[in-house]
Image (tube, rainbow, N blue to C red):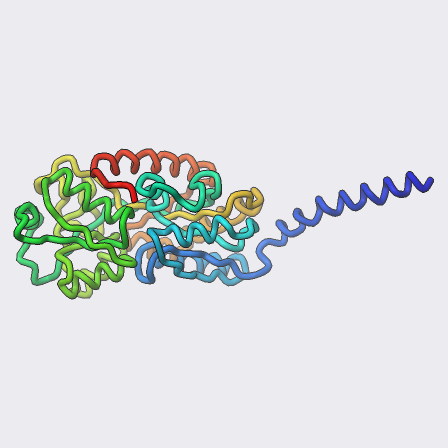
Length: 326
């Protein structure tokens, strides 16, 4: 009898241990969710994280806090998320830089595929926009190409650091157009834009969201977009393909959401559903479309496949652009 009671008690304890995580998952979220953004405030990832996150917070009845954790082309924030408790309360909002880093760094403090769980793809922007100071002598993209091919012109371009999508766009242009632009890394897209405005650098590539605001404010002048076709935000701005670099077709990058590996599948699914739902809310959808950042409704599995394809794509671009490993 004693043996039987002990067995029943043990089984009850085991049953309770299985019920606890399940209860926690069904109760998710019961405290604020933190979104780590590896780039400075004002850039596309930051803007999207704040706009979508605010709506998600309203939907789920919990605060969604954005924290800008800068450093090492997104590696600092990514490492923090990789090491976070896998419970859904610490997430990473990042860009194609996350897919590029394995190709440009000799080692990383995490495994890009094994230590993260893809959750949701926010958007794939159609293009980046090359901008210059309003007083730049380059009035057209063809003028810019002519200038940038002269070593004595000392043409430079700023980016949010080495190895991100904006940096690779410049290196790819150098490789495909024979330009000699010097890359100058900054700690975010906003500081790179400020450098153009202060004439510290000649140009920079911007996301459509950032470019739209800067152009409307008269801070910069757009010269060309990197996509094969013109984009809705700047229908009057030519593509690089139609202006002297026929093979240039480079999208504006993407922004997506990752959780630490081993985050329970029901939690990942719930977060994915809520973020996809938030992007369809009129105030969020309209804002994203105005930035030429159309919402994408991917499941975690679809985003995972997309991310692996992006890693392969950027490995090829890094090789074409001859970017050395750091």
